[in-house]
Length: 247
Image (tube, rainbow, N blue to C red; front, top):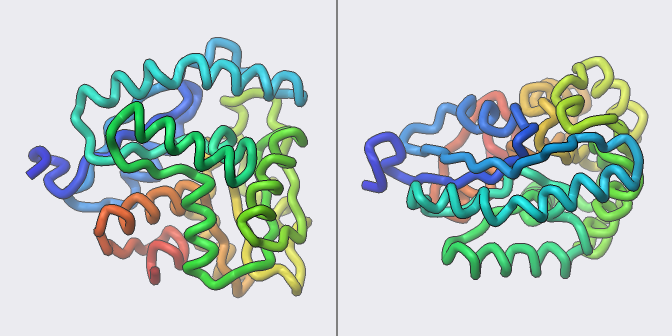
């Protein structure tokens, strides 16, 4: 037994201090015996309204991640899960691999990242031609597209919501998301992929799957799925998309 509430696993979850969605989405899954200990990366200036602002935001994340990891490790987790996504896509496939390696060396634990989770999810779903949306600025969407292309996927479309601040990501409403999905979807698109962990999308992704007749991958569902499966846990979750329900 790991502990009384996480008797099957305790996942350490690293999130920006501005993020209010990741922990909600994980606990919402209602997985018995799985506990989460979140560590926050301090974001004193959450402005991200331009490419330069977005790069500065990443600088704040990089400056504070070691402290967040240090704090989480005191709970003695079994796995580290990155509850932020942009940094895990940066530098393409090689950049993600290097990021994961640094975190494994720092913690001595297995690591789940958004980029690797999405790649594994798309392979499990058997999809190659994808359309992607994010809350990001163009500089970050370029990196996201680069990762998926290098990972062997055909990116039919990619767009960002250009949120002006990090907290504004969690304020994006369902209607705006629906319009964004419609703008990137097409008959040749096999799957819709959402990145940006502070965007509340898991429940809506389930709804859109039924409407569109194709998989819709929400990144918080993908990271939870990947963490579970890589940890040898086969729990199936209803209401969070076919990835967690069927794979």
